[in-house]
Image (cartoon, rainbow, N blue to C red; front, side, top):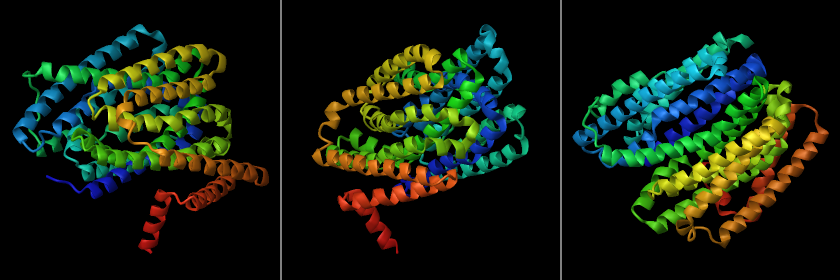
Length: 481
């Protein structure tokens, strides 16, 4: 059942863009309606539940996709594998709920967020029965994309109907849950098309347990250093500080998601080439992916740093301008995190070095937590942003170190010349942003002109230096005329 790689790339890319546009449409409205305190409560409750979601997930998605893809042409064997994985997932879900209820009982400070946490907690069950890993294995991107469009459109309508004042943050919580897992009952029933999934007590624990546990531990460590800043900020500071920082982190995550969306469809191909040890093809594609990612991410980081005040005002309003320093501190994290992601999921995991990924994530998480407790009392949300950037830099350094034998033949002098050109072009973006900021007062016009002129100037510089990827984009554009 061979799928069109080009069609899958288009569909998956469209879904990534959709996931990007959803917060761009909803967050400016929500942040203004709920204000910093409401956004703070929402994000703190969400950060708490995210840990229990991870316990329920147990690293099963990455493991199931990697191992299940080998069996998908044999319905009987795949059904047996899927049933075992699904049963393990149900057991981890029960454990996650027990730990969640225990936490609500033991930690009295969570009582103020109890209802929001319980609503967010519905995601745990619905994510498990959604068995989305089955659809990834069978490359059912059309189904996933259509479903995403339908439920996100319904959620936008619900948002504008039921979130109208600052006290409506619980409505926003419920709508968020509906948007993310509302279709998962349909997913479970539709999965019968691919396999006969059921609860089974015949589980090959020896085969499944170790790789699942390692991937799970990696996910826990990653989640800690991604979410610990908001959790610790909520504990040590206030809902207001969490709300301010949430705007900065939301913008940071939106830009990061956009950068990842440009290359995410190449991950399966890179994994396949590395798994089959087709190293020449793998090196060529990895070089292309990281070069194009750098071509976009480096100027985007410079531009976001310079335009941080305008972006925050446009997204959330002037009352969130206190978040400008934290957003600028997160720019370093943006620059390095997308490359960590590529090397982790395109090199370490396909090469079955999940233990090295685990070490990288654990070390980064420990550093992040220690620095959060040291810097948040002194710098509030700015301390949280700084620790995230430091942890991301360490994460990239460790992943590159553990991948060095594979990466050493990939990056030549030509790659580093391209990087120098991207940095050189980005300095012109800084200059343009400074000039426009001094000449024009209107925020929206500043953004439009700065982005438009910067993109044009950056493109011209790449063409002058005869950047192969920019020339290729230009040739394709001319052909389409």
